[in-house]
Length: 447
Image 1: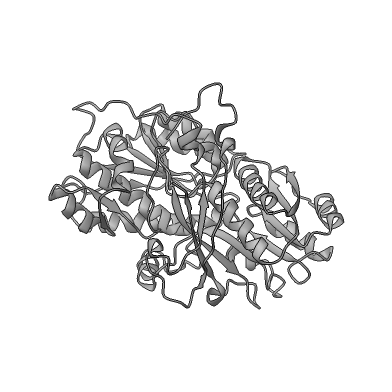
Image 2 (image 1 turned 135 degrees about the vertical axis):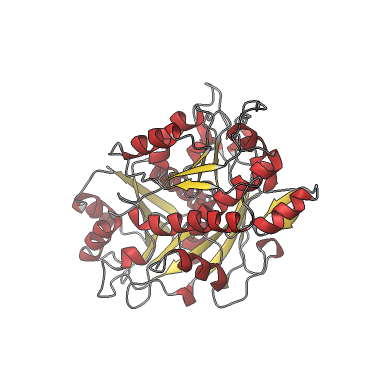
């Protein structure tokens, strides 16, 4: 929710990271709220570019007749494409949120309406087609996209129409200073945070040299950059490579990786990661021989299904994720009983809840009015953890601080989390995530 002037061509690239302290717990241990420090790692950093290097834009001034009384939500999430494996938990999260909001009386006394839509990939026109249809249908909010690259293809179309875009999964640092008319938000943290967490994990593994291969798109470039910077601050030797997102063969790239003979390898990719990993295994730099990490774009059971022989055993990966309770998982499973991964499900759920709470504070379903209140419901008020309890506080005239299924958010001026919980997951013998090995870390922007 911010913009840089023409002189700030580096966008979020001027972010500086600082000292890091670490505490970790396994998934078997009880997790208190991250602020209590019981189950978290604090990755402390200097203020982000959203504070120091660009001036956040404010939403336009709302008009009295801007709403029609019904909060209408559209989604722009991956039914197809390289991130289709993320679609089921994201769709389920939005559906669950709407169900629970409506069960609690809706927003402003009316049921919330939701229309689901496919985002596809950057190499298709699906996202633009979906966006055009949903805008024509009069949605107030579009939840999505999952892919940072896809969001960049539609963000201008959405925000210039004075409609809110709120992504549950965009992590590219480039959004922090993007000129978005004050109408873009996200519940996923910037990769400025994930880069620090990933670097810390690699350092703790004892890696003195790391090779990072990444997609040549906003997601891959951003996460690669901030991981590299954090590693180099600690004296780690780092080599990097970017690959074309349309590539189908990776022999040359993996040859380059192998020749570096790093202690650890990081794959920042989407569905194509399975091909890269298979090539790495063939060349002797797979998880059985080296420290190998994935990230939120590939880590999960969907990737593991491509390695039925257990070839991924020992591979780890980082992703923004709270320690989900069984109760929340069960609520998600009631919406979609076939869920095997929950990645970005909580963030999708919270994107809807946060928007609905902002509408209650604004006393309007006008997107501009909602945008003016959206940051505020995540900070500096009385803590609440579900829609019904939060609305009760609002009706009592109290400010709220919504800490949802995805954890505390504390949105900064750029309309994005300034703190987040991360999971470090590990594959077991069957190339599926072994939940008992998961550890959680908490990262925040210092100050």
